[in-house]
Image (cartoon, rainbow, N blue to C red; front, side):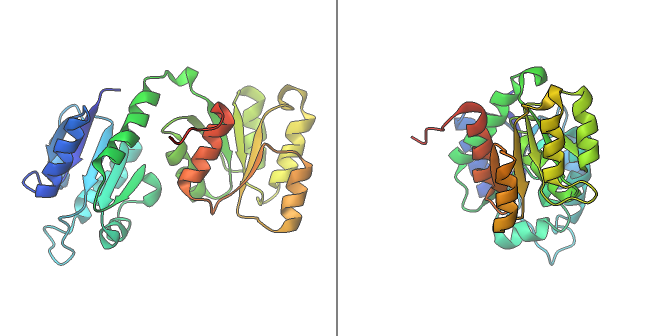
Length: 260
């Protein structure tokens, strides 16, 4: 992937230009366009990295309320599969989430922005997209909650090849003909819950050694004890911060991460 970013926001804005200069300093080519649907659509050869600056939104002004471009991005991201990074203050980000689903946004930054931190996150995408899809670690996420499935896919697709299954039966059927490196498994699901899915995996010779982690909202003692008896790799809670969840998966594959 080329080190190129589409920066969406008024090019005359001091903050937008500061972001552009900061990214250029970090080695990125920056293409700028106004925060309008028409301006975004007119950009030729769009990169796969979008940075959206929300600082000029005026909810009282129909021409500057951003609704049209936000709705456009919400639809376009499913078709064009770009990575979207949002920059704004609390109210701006909350307003944007009304029209642009949070689960489709790769990362959110609260102003004031640390451009170096943004560039570091973009570097991760560039680095991992230089790896062929066949070389990426493959993760199957199993959850009956569609919103949770899409959110986890958005978070993990930066580094991993992610598959989704909305039930235990679909997951087991998928595993009959597909190889993955890890299963992230919800605990509570209708018809076939997580423990039953894991028991089926352990009883199937071809996949009996497949690593499985529970990813669940169940934190009561009984559930934890039941899960522990099945010897999953980890028991992760959905309430974990995004960074902590991703770190747990990264460390499973690559070992302890040096924070220095």
